[in-house]
Length: 213
Image (cartoon, rainbow, N blue to C red; front, top):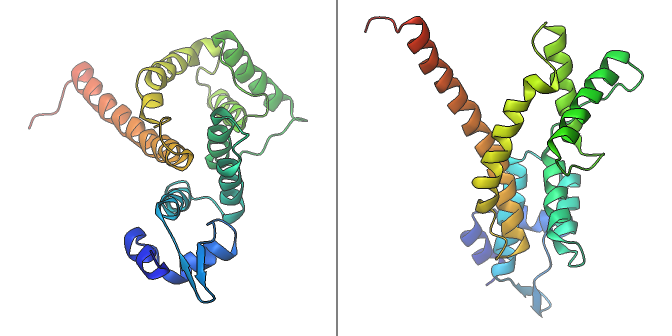
C-alpha cells in the first residue's frame, strides 16, 4: 500500500507517518521508484504500537525509540523486550539514597519483594515506586510494613498470574505483545483502581449502613 493508504488504514496522518520515518520509529517502505514506497502490515502494526506508547503510555519519543529498538532486536528475549516497555511506562520517582527515611522505606520494599520470592531486577523502577508509597504511608502514620502490604502483593500476583499475563499474545508479533502489555498495564491498572473504589463504597454501605434511597 502507498503512504496515503497506510494513513487511511492506521488512522495516522501522513505528516505524522513521515515524522516517524525520519525519527527511525517506523521502518522505511520498499522503494518501488524514486518517489514511491510500498508499505505493508508490518508498518500498520508498528504504527499501532507507537500510538499505544504515545497515547496510553504517554512516552516521549526518546523512550519510544528504546522500546522500538528492543522490539527489533531479535537476539533479545521476550522477557527483556517486555521489561523494556514496562520500565519505560513506569512513572519517574526520585530516589534519595542519602536520606535515612528513604533508605528504610527502600529496604522495606526490597525485603517484601525478597520475602515473596519474586524475580525482580535490582534496578526495576517499581522498587522505587513501592519505596515511595511505603515512605508516604509511614509519614501519614498508616501501616507501612511488608506484613501490611503483603495482601496487596499477593492479590496482585494472583491477578497477574491467573489473568493478565494470559492477555499478552506471545504467539503473535513482538509489536503486538508489547502493545498488549502497555495497554493492559495502564488500562487494567485504572480498572483495578476503579473496582477498589466501588468495592470500598459497597463495603462501607454494608458495615455502616447505606443511606435511605
